[in-house]
Picture: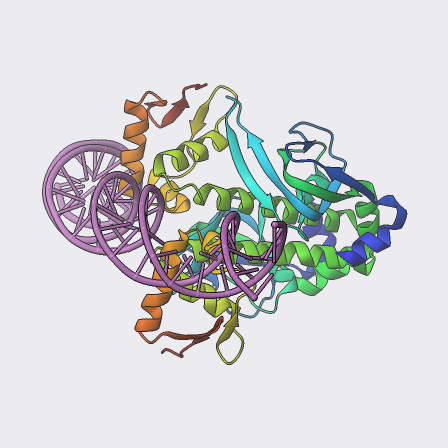
Length: 195
Length: 195
DNA sequence: CGTCACATTGATGCCTCTCAAAGCTTGTGG
DNA sequence: CCACAAGCTTTGAGAGGCATCAATGTGACG
């Protein structure tokens, strides 16, 4: 990501957004893809009858609007949820990079492919109905070889990511602990092996 | 798509599948991406608790398993829904094409980007808890300018895609119809405008 | 004409959301 | 150094919604 930005050098452009501001609208000519440096933005699509369909909420460090690299116009609105700084990577520069066969371009393709895999993994996780199994699967995906998980953020944030109420997550965690599936010690979760 | 195949020339390989056959399974060594010539195949992941997560249903002319280009093994199953003919495009050939900056490689990147967009849209849909709203949003995303939706597959398949029991979808559809949100006539669904 | 998959509706039970309250941790300001 | 606020963690009780089981109707297809 950084490499891509550096490779493009002066062609990138930094934009600051205030809460509620719109970066681009559905139908606007596509200028390129973006990197979210700080803050939070949301991609929203409008249906013909005026309703809104939220597509994605972007967190810092993520790229977004990659699909617009190959489109003539944006297919959704991008609105700012919390004061943000974004970097614009112009389509033509990116495409030039790809056309040149530059490694940074190849790396971008790899990231896109990884993105697809990651999104599919999340879809799988969310499809698990039972919250205990869902939580356990999520933890298994994050654990090291010894079965230990050190959570990055709060349990509450994890609950939101897994699509459950935070109370439900606490209860599920307690249940799994009672059932001997995992142990907890000051923020470190240890997952017991199962067959 | 055709361009990609022609560019690779003799490196491609044609495979015929019967209904129910499996092209590859989760964990198989990745050989490359595929092009669906005729028929229909589906990408499916299996969750630990035995549920299926349909990731994507491929129609003729589409490419699939692009993400496996940069992975050592496939991360989902590919099963044949209707007798199909597919073309295998080996990873190493494709990567060579990308490195050369060929237009066909560029088009591939565009498809990957579109895939990301599609998966995000699905994720956002599944995040809607109320089944009626979820169904309505899904229909809104598929309707034309006049608010009409002609479903591709069965309602049962749509239910699986939206992550709900098929009975629940029928009931939700009936509810929405009773509430005047939509109308149905021999397979065609018309969505009423709302303020 | 039988079989199979989809479509539809009913009844029931459980799981998760929601509201509520209390303990715990962290940070901040007086 | 204390007191207070704010956010996370945890547990309880209740209500509602969706999955599940079950049964029937329907259309396609061989």
